[in-house]
Length: 242
Image (cartoon, rainbow, N blue to C red; front, side, top):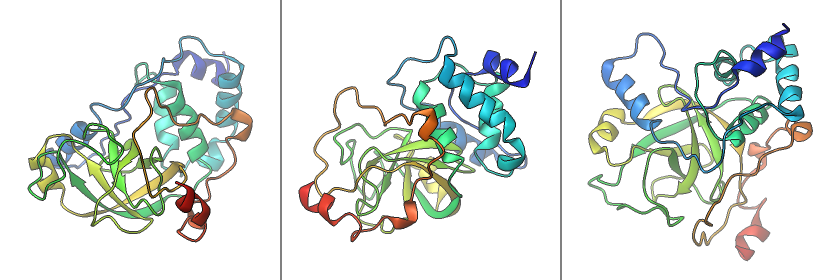
């Protein structure tokens, strides 16, 4: 059996948690808490189709190229069967993310019970919950998706903003209602990978029912996301119309 065939048999999608050796117990708890309830508004793959076969074949042939990328171990864990069923869009976005170099962000954490306010609702009109984050709306539109590295190790959807969240490399990871975990988390410098960048808007309205991030076709997945080109000037038309 070929590597690609073996990988196909093992492909699964799950809460993408990778806990590195040597973490303190509270850090491990933070990681697990932050990834325990990722969005899952889509059906999982039950049987591989031609696009998934093509994806796995390309990855299996590109191990040397991507071995040092932080997303590659995540995809390999999927192949090994360590993850259970998850929405199909996650694999497509992770695969696309392999084409983007990791960047470093300043990351804090928030919850619906933080003393500095915020409440139970996001700017996009959704519940404050794990699996989302706040970002600067001048650079990241609602529905943008990032992969945030250790100790979070999770795919996060941008559904919120904050007065202290300024700049293209600044995020506030949501820990649901766990204010204590937010306090323990503090302020950290964490590597991240942009997976999908929605056009920035001044007005966010309400998250559409059944919304899912755009799934990149396999033949387009090698096109990198141009995060460095983002900025208020680059999206002036979108800001004016949004």
